[in-house]
Amino acid sequence: MTDTGFHPDTPTLFLTDEDVAALVDEDAAIAALRAAYSRPDEPRRTPERAVAVTDAGWQRVMPSAPAGGRFAGSKTITASISNGLASYLITLFDQNDSRLAALIDGNRITGIRTAATAAAALTALLPPQPVTAAVVGSGFEARAQLRAASRVADITAARVWSPTPKNRERFAADLGADLGIPITATATAEQAVRGADLVLCAARSRDETPTVRAEWVRDAATVVSVGSTTPTQHELDPALIGRAALVVADAREEVLNDSGDMIAARHAGIDPDAVTVSLHDLLGGQATRPDEGIAIYKSTGSGFQDIVLAELLYERALEHGVGTTLPVGILTIRK
Image (cartoon, rainbow, N blue to C red; front, side, top):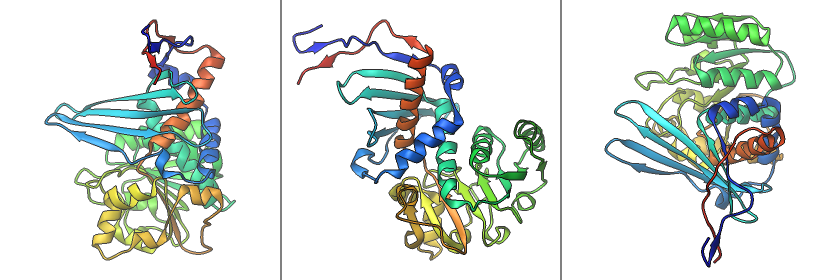
C-alpha cells in the first residue's frame, strides 16, 4: 500500500493450461466470438501487434479492449528460435477499476480461439447442406479446426493429409471416433482437397511453398486458412486467392499486409484488397457471400479473439471454482 496505490480486494486469478482445458466449452466459445464480431469494428480497440526481435528469438504482444466487454488485456508470446521453445501469457484487466483480474496460460487458448473464430465465420459462409471436409494438417490446430467446424456444419465425411503418414492416420482414427464420421487419411494433399466442400488449412509446408493449389479446389468451396500468419509464411496458392469471390479476414489490415499468402498474391498481380472484407462486416450483416465462387476465410489471429475467450474462461472459472488465487498482486495506482 502507498499513498497513491492500493491492492484491490479481489485477488488475481491464475489459470493454468490444465485449467483452460477443463473450462473450455466449444459452443460457448463460438457463440461469444460470433457475438463479439457481430459488433462494429473499432480498430483503435485492437491495435496491430507489436514484435520485438532479439538475437535469440522474438516477443509478440497482441492487445485488445473488445467493445461490449468488461476486460482489456493482451497476449504476449515469447519464442526462443534457437531451441524451438515458446510461451504464451494472457493478461486480463478489469476496465472498471484497472485491477489485474487474471493471468492465463495462453498456449491452448491460441488454438481454441482460432478454431472457434473460424467456426463463427462458417456460420455465415457455409450453405445449410451436408458437407465433405478436407483437412490439411494433423496437429493441434487442425484437430481444433475440424472439431469446431463440426459444431456449426453438417460434416458427413472428411479426408486428411499431413506429411507424416502415422500422424494423419492417427488423426483419422481419433477424430473419426470422436465426431462419429468417416475420415480417410490420404497420400497427398490433392487427394484430400479435390471435390471437398470445405477445406481446412492448418499446416504450412516445410519449405514455405503453398500446401493447397488453386486447381484442386472446386468452384463453390469454402476455404479456411489459419496456418500462415506472418509475411514469410505461405499456405495458399496465389492463384487460389485470385479465384476467390470473397475473402473474409479476422483482422483485415493485418491479413492484407502481414500475411505471406496475401503478399505473394499481390506480387503475382492479384488485388486481394478488392474482394476482402472484415469478419465484423460478415457477421454484422454488412457483407454476404456471393451466390457463386470460392469463399476464403483467412486468419492471422488477433488479441481481440484472445481477450473475448479469456473473459469467457475467467467467468466460468469463478462460477466453477477453478484456478489459483495469487497470494500477492500488483498495485492499482490513483492518477
